[in-house]
Image (cartoon, rainbow, N blue to C red; front, side):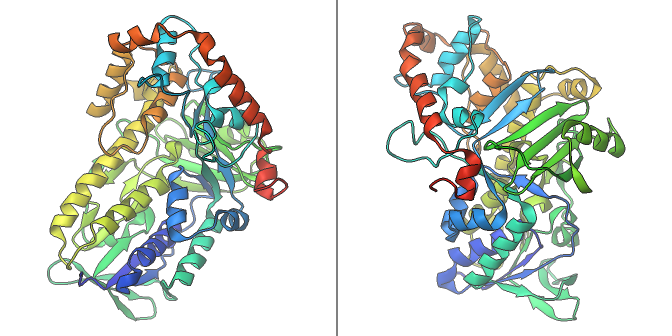
Length: 494
């Protein structure tokens, strides 16, 4: 049994309330006192997209999807479409679903990779139900009836303010406490750990452990002088994001769209009411005004006050330091290309719950937490960087500067191996599966020089006509799904 009884969470965003609800549910039997002290950080994002892992944590927290979608202006996300990353006119999908079906132990993507080596069509989309539905503006939940109908999953597009309010109400209903007064200062004990936080009304709030969910300000970690940091800006120079409201998208598909630009990339995602658009860019290659002009030219109709978010790609070396754990942007800062910001926060929470300390010291647990979360964050960085380096042939100073940097070792190994023989090497603790990597590598036109002999011998005997029934079944199933926005708004059975 642990002697940790009080956990204080500092922050006012979605990550803070997600953390509070998760701890309350996980340790309900211990009667853990979970308290949130909201910070005054300015809102810096209007909307966000998530990975399918959000479905998992929602289920654990008892969130009913129908209620959640209705309350938060959310839509579903089957895929991301990347436009212009290989030059003007190029595009490809990364769908949240399988590609084809296993070929006697050989992943289907290797068959497509072999076709690419012979100069033939290697597009994964015709072999994916998620991709077919996303392209056609269709959506339905996966069902376990057949291998094909269970071959995909989905994430969400979220109105961030509505999502935060929903999580707050849910956490309070679970029994989480919320302090009405904001934080004024952090009080350290003689051993350098956090003893308490002082509130604006003068009250003191003690805790055994503290979660820093205050975003880039990292008010708790900064008070601990936890400055050691892994800097990723050599590979990922983007340091700004502007987001704005945009008009609704007629018959909006269940996908996020990114559009490469001269110094970064624009994005657009649908909500039930309206949409949200933005631009992620490097201030070293363009000005804020020029970036805003680019956004307005790329996504016509954006309106309202632009929200600016600044960040510096990288992570803290110690995400668990003394009795404080950095969750979200207080620990890891990364552009949202992969939609993994909430995912990394969820991983941090799940790992903290698994390693929950038996006492107030927790040094052994902290070391293991830092190892695991450091590896997971680095691998998400590598997946993000792969979009720029797998085969992003777009020209310009910005793109050429990214290509000149030496790759992180594990990403270099992964790309070298795929280019040599079509295999995708997977490391421990990867958030993105082998199929996710195949979507990006094949979609971006990264063609292997050859296919490993064992797979090639097996695949050469496979006739392309064998897959005609699979393609036909995918087309038929996608066509029978409801329109995405009809499904979201309840005009079709949910």
